[in-house]
Image (cartoon, rainbow, N blue to C red; front, side, top):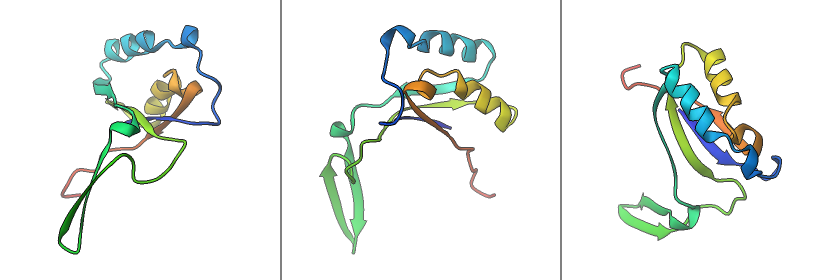
Length: 108
């Protein structure tokens, strides 16, 4: 799983350098793309918690943060090195940050 996140310390976003279509075409062509999408802004989030048996539903993010998850991609890679190589070509590697995390199947 590759989380696509904002990062206030990243270089400023430049739409002319946003090559997401190229990145997607490459990842699809190599057979590494499983699924992915953008996420709505944090203002559209709903937080669900149960505390002391009571359901608590609130609007917006749980914490105030300048960083937030903007999207995700599920990629199929032979190993971490290949996943890093794929992630490094994503435009948000420059304009934000990417977190790679292997899935952890139940039963392991």
